[in-house]
Amino acid sequence: VGKYAGSTGETSCTSCAAGTYQASTGQSSCTSCDAGSYCASTGLSAVTSCAVGKYSAVGASSCTSCAVGTYQSNTGQSSCTSCPAGFYCASTGMSAVTACSVGKYAGS
Image (cartoon, rainbow, N blue to C red):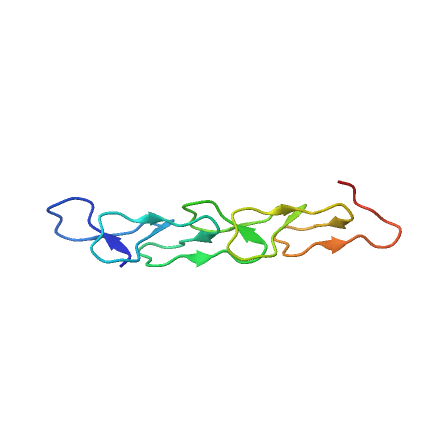
């Protein structure tokens, strides 16, 4: 697990690269990490889900924090959600929105 032999006649197996993994033995290739997860190092046999406030695309070796103005309240996601009107997301990596206080607003 975590390794592959890419062609016939190999004398050893190669560790899967960062961003990929292999959960089974006897394989000829590695699998890209799913969107919403990451594979930070070489030779992995499983993926790790992105935490709240973060996201990733397929084949990621790390998760990216949600940008200012967006948030993500769930783990293992491939994108962030824009803050809705009446709420704001003032910093990166937010996992929840903040409501505007009395006398203030945030447009769409």
